[in-house]
Image (tube, rainbow, N blue to C red; front, top):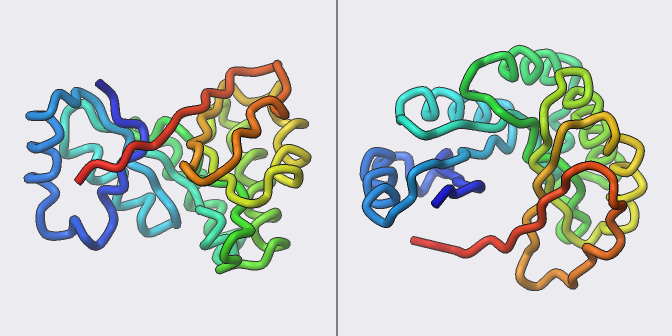
Amino acid sequence: MFDIGVNLTSSQFSRDHDEVVARALAAGVNGMLLTGTNLAESQQAQKLASRYSGCWSTAGVHPHDGSSWTPAVAEAIYTLAGEPQVVAIGECGLDFNRNFSTPHEQEVAFSAQLALAAELSMPVFLHCRDAHDRFLTLLKPWLEKIPGAVLPLLYRQPQRGAGMPGSGPVYWYYRLGMR
């Protein structure tokens, strides 16, 4: 089993990374993708992925942190994406549910990360909540330019997969919480 959305950089795990990974392995997980949600957590995810066999990471800025997207952050994510453990750009997208960053800030960060993924020929780890139509408008032009994408479906989110275009591999999955 491969866990594709591990938030090992969360502060709740800061003191027991080894134990969390050991429990996952004992439960039959043989691979993990550690998600980056801002520059610092992307850097931390890459370092953690380099510590554990069968772990990889993403590098990106979550929509909640869209206001942090700057040219310097973009350059740092670009550089980090060159590390062998980093296998996707993200978690990126739109989240109009709580708007920790404005919709405009989120759109700027999302569009820039899609462009970065296309330039580097890397897949994207996507996030969409309460922003389906705008999300698709921004994503569709990039689907032919990126090698793949994954989009977690939140359990309260209506099923909107029918709106996705048929081109490009976009994998939908349900996130099951495990503690």
